[in-house]
Length: 92
Image 1 (spheres, rainbow, N blue to C red):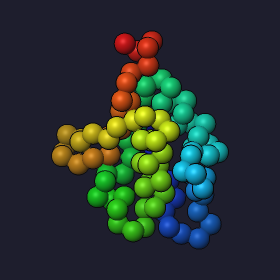
Image 2 (image 1 turned 30 degrees about the vertical axis):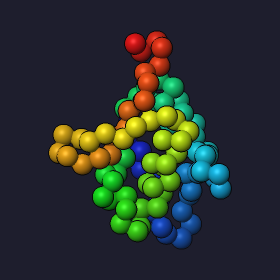
Image 3 (image 1 turned 135 degrees about the horizontal axis):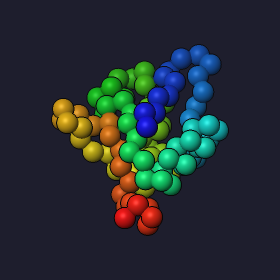
Image 4 (image 1 turned 90 degrees about the vertical axis):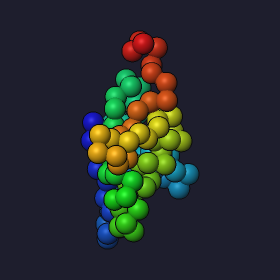
C-alpha cells in the first residue's frame, strides 16, 4: 500500500498529532493495514529529507513508533519499503 502525505504547504493535513501518533484517516487506514502485515511504501529516504516532505518524515517516525515497522531497501538500493518487524500471528 502506498502512503502519501502533504508536504510543507499552507493548509496541509498533518498525519500525526503533537505526540507523533497517527490521526484521522491516516490512523484508520495505516493501523488497519499494519494489523494485517501489509507492506507499505512511502517516499524514499532521500526524498523525505528534502525539507518539503515533512509529512513523509512524520509518517516514517509513526511507522516505527506506533506500528513497529522497519524500513528496508528496495530493489534499486533506496529505502521507502516498510515491513512489520514481526508478522501477525495469522500470517505466519
